[in-house]
Image (cartoon, rainbow, N blue to C red; front, side, top):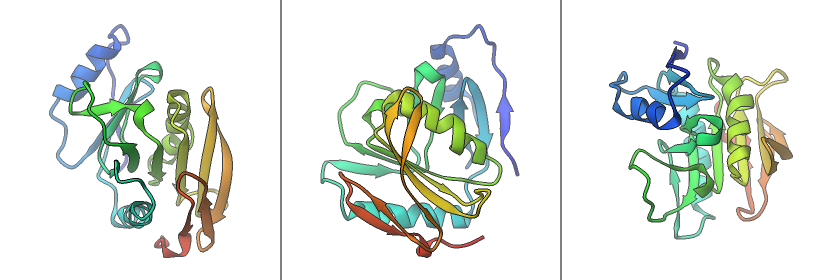
Length: 194
């Protein structure tokens, strides 16, 4: 099943779009995001997708500070890019905030992780990293199961404008080094192949 987009009135402001996103009854189990001002409804991620996210999460827990957390279904807001995005993983300090319980400002995130699905790979490669970089999220990990040259994991950093610089990359089966503050090697051989 592929993603469904829901159009909205382009005259609506950010607050109206977020209110619609929060108040609408969406299909149970679906992932509902606002990507570049368009509400996108995707099916829940498949088993292999979740296994990859879980293995990354397990490794990250061994190195993050006690006052940080790893979230799997937390929306992060990027109003300047008309985005309410739900990365596969968000690493952020646990803080008191005044936002609605449905999301946090993207600037609070230290790392976001996206694992591509066949139907949404373009968003994970282009739209979402542009929003994450614009928001100033320092680090982005893309696990691209559908990369044209074969499954690859790429770690990005040093955001400037809406672009990240690639810091390291590994084909599935090779180790991927994440620099400080994580100082971690992820063994992509643990990722299930499609």
